[in-house]
Image (cartoon, rainbow, N blue to C red; front, side, top):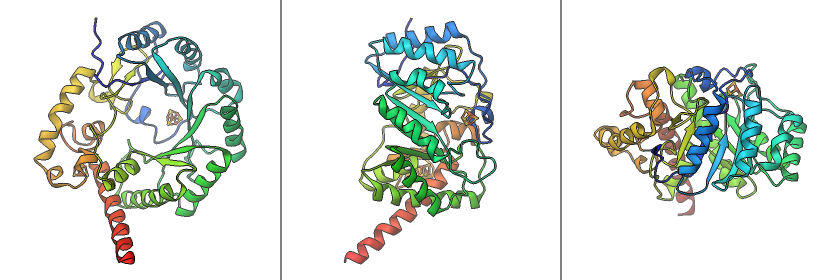
Amino acid sequence: MTIGLPEEFAYLKVIPSYVCTRGCDYCYNVLLAQETSLDVAKLLDGVDEALRQAPRPVHVELIGGEPLQSPGLDVTIDLVERLSRNPQCAGIVLSTAMVAPDRLSRVIPLLSRVYLSMDLSNSKDNRKRLHIQRLRSVAELCDAHGVDLCLSTVLFGDESADELSRYVEDAKSSGVKSIGFTHRTASPMSKAEIAATVDQYHHLFRLRLAERPEIEIFGSMLDSIELSIIGGSRKAPCECGRNSVVVEPDGTLSPGVCFDHRRGRYSIMQFTQLRSERPAHLLEGMCGTCRLWSVCQGGCVSEAIRLNGSPLTRANLECEIIRGLASLIERDIAALSNDSA
Ligand code: SF4
Ligand code: SF4
């Protein structure tokens, strides 16, 4: 039976378990009620079938919850070993916030990349602060096995420009090759918080240009803005359901990891259909005259559903942030042009 993988399928995300006891207050798994229970046999079947039907070898990312915490840990170790023997797997990626060497070292030799979740906020709610010495030991472990180490960092909004610069510098000196930044995507944001986030992305965009190629600073906002400046375009607002699909802990397929499960779950086919209908609806409204359409396309479908109850609307928060960021960067470009005139 065909499972309806998208034509451009190239990336499989697997959730060994939604369990994680770290307790981050912005955790989208918790805020979006993602609680599907683990069924090991069905999960393994789901992964095998997705790889069997994949039109080409694909990268497989294990993501949580926390893949290195029970009950995900045993499944993760088993999956990593199986995937390493599967010719349809082009590389194994692990997303984790765990740095315990006894756990990491059990899987690292078979991985191609680690996304390490680490935040820099001084807030008492930051559950992912990591001492630089520990970061260095993870970087050394990855380096010893030829594994790329990338940081995944969530902006709380309270990080100053100096702190962001220092964080990037520390990561670079520890051997980290790239850092992805995002804001708190599943929490409400006030106008002041949106403005602070725009300023942070603005600073990060400057750092991105200044630090290239020693360290790559990325994230969907930063990538989209640069793409817009160079006149590029995206095929879709994001990779969900286009070139990437998810195997849930019960073995079912879903389009992305960021969906609100209280509002029901979409099959890949339902989601593909929705996505093909969405541009026509959006282009009738303010997206129709927006200079960022080619790189934004209404933003995250899941955010639109969560905030407006409809996938055919735009992602309001993402919209405000990217338009704010674009204005600041356009102002920078205009100032540069005036200086050189
Ligand atoms: S570490 Fe990740 S999965 Fe765990 S609570 Fe924090 S955000 Fe959620
Ligand atoms: S920035 Fe806003 S208006 Fe522009 S394309 Fe994106 S969602 Fe639409």
